[in-house]
Length: 263
Image (cartoon, rainbow, N blue to C red; front, side, top):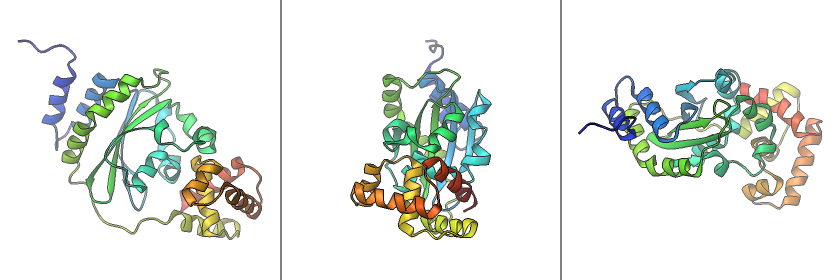
């Protein structure tokens, strides 16, 4: 019996054959193409300390990753909802960006001034943990190449194959460096960076609020994260803006992003 042409199962067999060997990422990408037809693929290793490691990237449009090395990896990744999955140690599985992003993500300066420039329209990431303290994100994207978001069927397919992707990834990347490091205290780093760059002293809570604003959390969402009322969050925001001598989120983003990059 002849195999069916373009069989996803046949391509999966090729992925399995390449576990632990050269060509694994390319075979994995081809399998994803036959399953849900992403426009791009990036594989990132998030760690408790330091910038993410890029293990693989591919896109037909150069614009998708044009700021990856200059903006995202040096510091903007700290504002990424998918990085928050690493911080919170989300269970292994498939996650769609729109389901895990903060409630005001699409109004955030990170989204408008960085994310939109990538032309990305939709993302689904597979989260797995090949070694202790390292989470791997195998992220499938849809961008301006197709102009289409993932369909409900695509999302269902990713959820169905997630255990397979997890098992394959854990087997292939089991030798990834697992050096333990003290987790970065990002608010504390931001406090030090703002003081050094602008002579402004922020409290740890003000730095925490600044980061949540930049990540795209609304006042209500920040209140839930911090366990305080929305009115208290508004007070924190006013104090933050007054101390930084700014009046908008755009100014906050312009001030803080270079400091995250340098932190």
